[in-house]
Length: 100
Image (cartoon, rainbow, N blue to C red; front, side, top):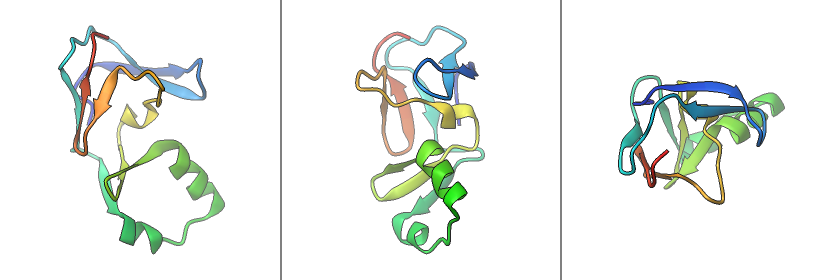
């Protein structure tokens, strides 16, 4: 669940991206598991009978962390991955690693 003000718009990287609508200082907790987020174990995930469209959606909007698939039910699912990230994801939280 996002803990900061954000907005979504077309991304220069790909598709829709999530953008900060406020200054975020280094060390600020930006997201944590809660609200509409869903955690699915790898075991349960393997048992799902997914269509091609569902698999395509998952590859874009659900991320894998420590043996679990995590679906963000709010706009956090539009967070882009970067080779030079400005946040750090733990299993249950996301923190700014520099001012944003």
